Image (cartoon, rainbow, N blue to C red; front, side, top):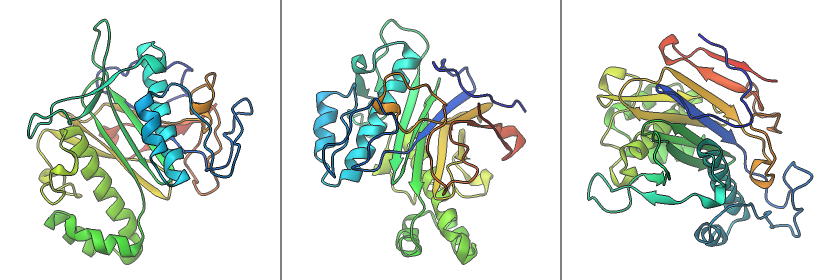
Length: 297
């Protein structure tokens, strides 16, 4: 398989059969982003105002009571705008987002999409964030991504009943020390699939099997686990064949607060993520199993 090199500062549209996934950690509330040119916080719960968000996004960010939730939301949506702006060669603030029709009721609450002026090949995206990690997936076809911090054993027990019966059996058979990670994989596959389907959790999680038996998973869909460090699980889902090439890149933590940040440069990630290779890439070729090669500048 090919070995991926550190990404170019300006990403190009993924080719057919390719998927780009970008991961970033939101800044801690009250702590300035790593970029020394960015605004400094003025109080213990202040999150620097990121550039490019719409008035609606700013209102939504302000509605969160917890500073950590505000930081995660603003970082996630600013990273999304900056990434899509680079792909589409448009200012992040100029992007317009819409909702596709829901596949169940045709209402305007299906998959989010970005309006592409001037035609060109479609560019699809999906956004997810959990405590301490954000994921943005970009592809030339419909895609769903999910990321979740591994839950406590108590949460696993409480939420297991929402899984498909076959998934519940697999989870029960997993060694106790592996159940948190196993549940995380099951749940992120499920949410990624439901996002790509366009229904979200309005379709009951128990409906679809997304366990380890590939022959029992939804037909004509590819659902794949992603590397996301030791405390998180992540997955993508796409309709049709498995992607030929998936590249996972870690974004600098200061990206949303510095217009000049280069994609793929070294970013502080923390000692709790051995093997995560911040600032590099993790490239996965699904046809070669779970082999992952990483490289950095």
